[in-house]
Image 1 (tube, one colour):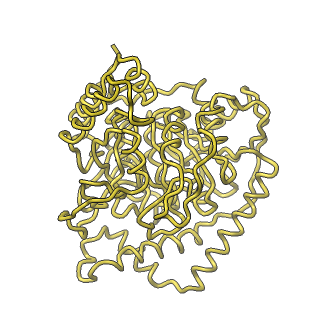
Image 2 (cartoon, helix red, strand yellow):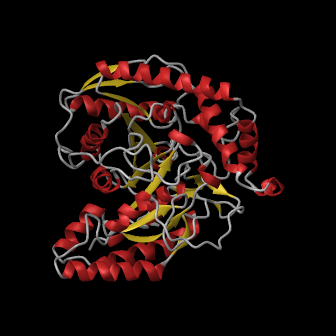
Amino acid sequence: MTDLADMTATELLSGFRRKKVSPVEATQAALERIDRFDGSVNAFCLVDDTEALRQARNSEARWQAGAPQGALDGVPTSIKDLLLTRGWPTMRGSRLISDEQDPTEDAPSVARLREAGAVLIGKTTTPEFGWKGVTDNPLTGNTGNPWDPTKTSGGSSGGSAAAVALGMGALSVGTDGGGSVRIPAAFSGIVGLKPTYGAVPLYPTSPFGTLAHIGPMTRTVDDAALMMDVLTGFDSRDWSALARPTASFQTGLKSGIAGLRIGYSRDLGFADVDPEVTASVDAAVKVLADLGAIVEEVNPGFSDPIDAYHTLWFAGAGKVIQAFDPERWDELDPGLLEVALAGQGFSAMDFLTATQVRADLGLKMGAFHEEYDLLVTPTLPMGAFEIGHEVPEGSDLTRWAEWTPFTYPFNLTQQPAATVPCGLTSASLPIGLQIVGPRHADALVLRAASAYADVVPFGRPPLLSA
């Protein structure tokens, strides 16, 4: 019999509906996976067995009565520890935040999951305040890769990625300010979507401003579409939240990609990419062409916007630490403190100049999508590297965004972008294929991701077979 922890949300819901699977059993299976593997990867900073099983029993009673509460009723789900969650502290990976909290409010995404009946099992690890593309922090330490715990899981939603990959809950919700859903999803061999900015409401407002997105992290594209149906829609607490979509993200998901115009860029014109990654992504793009897409190799026509990104991101970090007593700043992640102090030194003119670069990039991508329905790239230029480092050891890189050239540009433009696994390095570490669409074309991005993933199945982390 299939281990319930290996079942997707879609499969679990089908089993609940037919009364072949119990939400309590599914939750117990997820908790057993946490007991078995979390000591190796450190994906969770909080697990609440008692509350999870209480929710699961309530869900089971609803299913037995034929009256499920919502679209995710009974599905074990985790929450990144940047998002407010009623009843649990939100520590954000920082020693500067007191655990003596009275958490009475859910972030919009958490509220939607709760309203849909998801069983919330715990909170996942993040770098301090989600500031970087790997997951370690002064409070809870390093989070390892589910394929090799000596490697990084990526970040900043690294705990969520490791949890989903190892069956420690079928679903998780992460945040993405420069790749923080897509980076760990790619390194961990799962699906991640950064939706169009505002599609999933965010509260409290991120100190990183309009770079910050909320998105689903799942093992399948079907589950990502299911989550998007739950997570999207207006919330008055987010001044930039978009209206709820008029159609389900599951509608047309299996329509295929025949006739779509896809531009493929191996390096965006400026990235240094490992040949193993290029080979895997080339093969994935050939699959897209075999499925009927019209694929053309292109250069989208913009230079590396990293300086503008750093200005905006470092300024956000400066805003983060402003809320705390400077006498305690030495308790911060040293890298966070370094970029925050740099950010506090920027002027309003520096910020507005970076904002103009952002606007110009958005204009270029708008013109690109007049000709191409989608842009396809590698998600990352390499496989996961050693745990505990912001940048690969031995490289001449300084900051995390320098090795994520394919992700942060599309936070600047606020476009939807998904990653799906498309191969392994020679070290048996996952490689990701990124699919980028024009703003508001989230359903199209998911449709293309589904078309690829449905014909190219992906394996399981070796830990699961150990």
